[in-house]
Length: 315
Image (cartoon, rainbow, N blue to C red; front, top):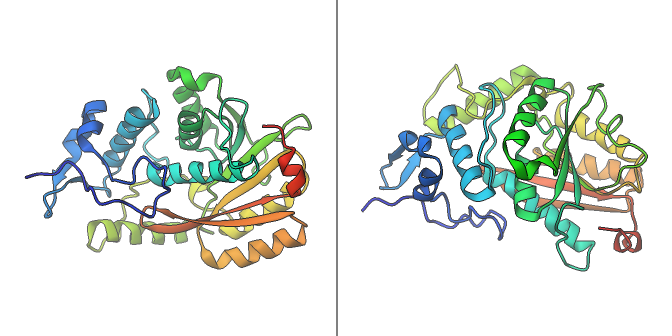
C-alpha cells in the first residue's frame, strides 16, 4: 500500500515544529495541486519528490506555506534562494523559547513583538512563519532591491502580512544595523541567515556536493535546487567576517534590542564568535544547536542586558 509521506518522526526538529512527522502530501496537494506532478513513489513505497529539482522545491514551499501558514500567494524569481521551510521554522521556534526565557517562561505573542530580519531575501520566510505561528511583526532588510520588490508583492497579496511585515533597503552594503535601527526603535530580537561562503567558487563547490548527494551521482554542472544570489550565498570574508561585523555594530544598540541572534553554519567559527562577544562585554551568550535538513547548524544569541534588565523588558 502506497504511503502519502514518510511518517518517521524527525526528532531533530523542534518539538513544536509542524513538520516533525514529515510531509503529508495529500494535505499539501489539496492546498496546492501544482505540487502533484512532481511527486513519485520511491523504492520504499513512500510518496516523495526530487529535492534536486528547483521547480519541485518551489512547489513544495508554496504548498507548505498555504496549508500550514495561511499564505495564499507566494512566489520567488527563478534565481533566488528557495529555503527548506522546516529548518526555517525551527529558528522561529527557538527564538520563541529565547524570548520566553526573558518573560517568566511564557512565549510572548502578538503584533507588539518586533523582530528584525537581516537579509530577508526574496522569499520572506522568517516573517511569514513568525507571523503565522506567534503573530509577531517584522522589519525585513536586504541590500538587494529586486529581492525586496518580490517580498513587497508577497506582502500585498496576503492581507495578514500588510500590517505586520515591513521592508527596508540597506543602502550601504558594508553595514548591517547602521541605517536600519534608529534611535526610536526597539526590537525584541534580530535574526539572520548570513552568507556562508567567502567566494563564488566556494559556493559553487558546496552546491555541487549538495546536488551530488541529492541525486546520488556525480555532476560538474550543479543545478542549484535552492537557488541563491551572490549576496545570499557568499560575501567577502565569508560567514565569520559577516558575523564579526554584526557583533561590532550590535554594541551600538545595547538597550534597543533584547536578543541579537544569527545562524552559524560552521562549527569551527563558534569559539571565535564567543571570544569576540566576551570582548565586547555581552551580558549573556547562548548557543542553540539545531538541524537544517541534513545539515547541522546552530544559533548564537547574545544580549547586552543583565538578567534584571531582561525581566524589565517591555514586551
